[in-house]
Image 1 (tube, rainbow, N blue to C red):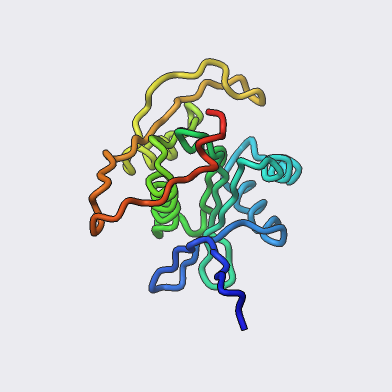
Image 2: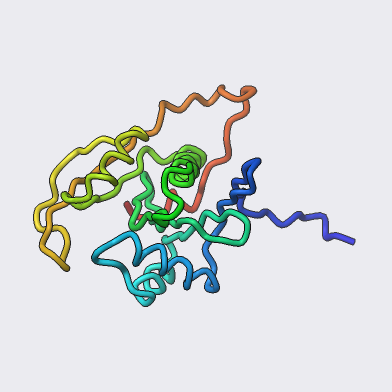
Length: 186
């Protein structure tokens, strides 16, 4: 017998071919670390991930197919934007649509919580990432000089702006307001 109050769960993205996007949990770390090390010359350590994920405004998500994690993303929630901190798809499953699904999930999060944009920084030498995000609508907005402490390398700040909000779109129902975001600092 229920209490009359249903537990609200995070909407997960599941496709016809069994690909699933869900919150990152502790037991995902070995596979997340494999994807991280295979993807980046200067990779995060497990402590870097844990330190980041302990912050109240930081979210980690993984994309899995069957019982294998193919990629992950870490982003911060701010009042008016999402800031993507880390994003990787394991090289063995790149160009299979996993990255596109994760970007789609971010866009859903941005629009459903009425944030205006998604921001990220990408290394100047990481042409593949620049082209990937550009293909998904992101635009380089400025150069960040000496952005990376590990190499002194510059980065491009890239942004994706939310489409204009229409309160009468979708059966004329006004979407719920994210009251937590109203009190977060940008």
